[in-house]
Image (tube, rainbow, N blue to C red):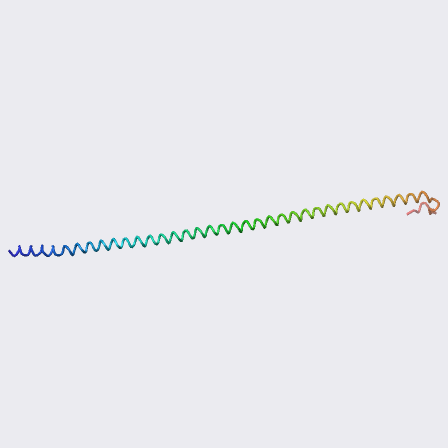
Length: 145
């Protein structure tokens, strides 16, 4: 009979511990679920933050690319303007050289004409004034320098 009483007592203790065990299991599974939910929320928040940072970085990168493109376009415009100015200067120098060449050519032609006129005048004078020529007689024809 003692065995019977001890087995009934053991069963009673087991049955009495069953709701506590069930509550502990429920609590642990509830806390696990709540912990899992909390972790999921934290992960979602982290993902949102990472996504926002990535979007900001992408936006900043796009803005930097736009700024770099604008700077490059400005440099290109400046280079084109400098090129145009250099071409204008080169054309002006070329025109000036051509004008100088023409001026020199005209001056040369004028000098040639003046020389021709002077030579013609000299020849005319030589022909018209033959009596005024000075002749030197060579005393010793063998001793001519």
